Every structure is written in structure tokens, then in C-alpha cells.
View 1: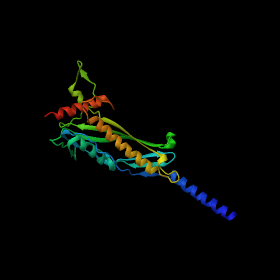
View 2: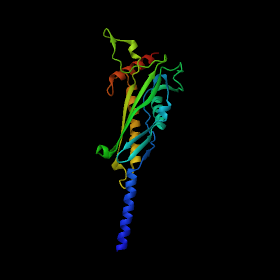
View 3: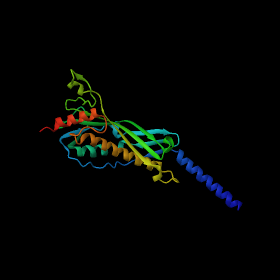
View 4: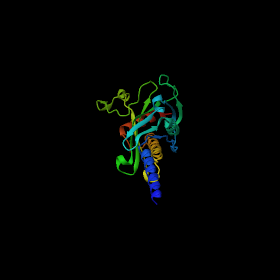
Length: 242
């Protein structure tokens, strides 16, 4: 009986150390981009899209007290997210290799970037969710090489200043995703799977935010900064004229 008890205690101790190591070790997450295809009528003009090296190679690493560090390879999915979304919103999407040579057959070049990423584990937030926020910036480079201003409030004599539409202000999108830890085994450490699901949900949210801004341009803005949506709508209307 004593031998069995000793062996059981030893086995339990080893299991406890293994679980502790799993909880305290580093976690690497590789999520797939499962962005639904928006069912909308595309706008009748072409756009370019430019993917910088910083975007497609973006890796987020964050120190987390209860996990050691969490690393998420976000860059590998960005082309999929934006190609699928923009590809349904416009007549044609042209991949642009350099902003120094903008194609003449596009109304502008869309340039997405990741501004900031933040993660929260259930232990940090004291709830049941793994959460991720991905803040994107999207510039639209016009054919003359200037940037479309999404948030201009400048005016002259009560009228909008046309030159104020071209500044360094980007179109900001704050995408959010979460996953419930209760959906994953509590015995084995499944934080990587939960974080992958949260990241996938953030990709979907980003796509929905883009579609909400680019579709139904006749409707008043309902989500996000109305100044940004107004600028996007005006740009779309200008380039949709026959």
C-alpha cells in the first residue's frame, strides 16, 4: 500500500510539473484566415492594393504573466483577409509592387497596415475569454500620389477646403475577436487553439468593418467615425460616375 501510494504521489507530482510547465511556457499561435465572402454588388471601378513587407511579415509577441510569452504570426494572413474583402467590393483589384509606380487604371491604391495589437488572457481580464484587438490603418493613395484624408474637418468660409482632403490621416479600423476558454479542454493546455479562434474572429470583424464602410454608400454612416465614412463615400461616388 505504501509503495502504491508513493508511486501515485510521484506520478501526480510529475503530472503537476508538466501542467505547470505548459501553463508557464511560451505559446506560438498560427491562425487561419477564414473570412466570409461579402455578398455585395462591387463598385464599378478598379483599385490597387499594396502590401508592405512590414505587414506581410508582422509577428506580434507579448509578455503575459501567466503564460510567459505569446507569439502570433499575423502577417501570413493579411493578403487573404484584404484580397477576399476588397476583391468583392470593387470591379477589379490590382496588386501593386511599389507606391512609386501607381497604375493608371485604378482610382486609388489601398495600403493596409497594422498599427497596434493587444492580447488579454482569462486570468488577466478575470473572465472566461481570450481576447485580441488588432488596430489597422488603411491609406488610400490617389492617382496623383497624395493620400485621401479620412478625417478632415477643415473649412474655409464655412465650406470644405479641397486641399485639406489630402493629408497624412489614415482610415483606422479596430478589429476585435474573442474565444471562450470553456470551449477548450481544461486538462490539457489549449490556449494556442483559443487564441487562434480569437484571431480568426478578429479577421472577420475587420472584414465586416471594411464592408460596412464601403457598401451602401447612400445610407448614413452607422458604425465607426462618420467623417471617415463620409470621405470614403465621396471617393466612391466620384469614381462611380459614368
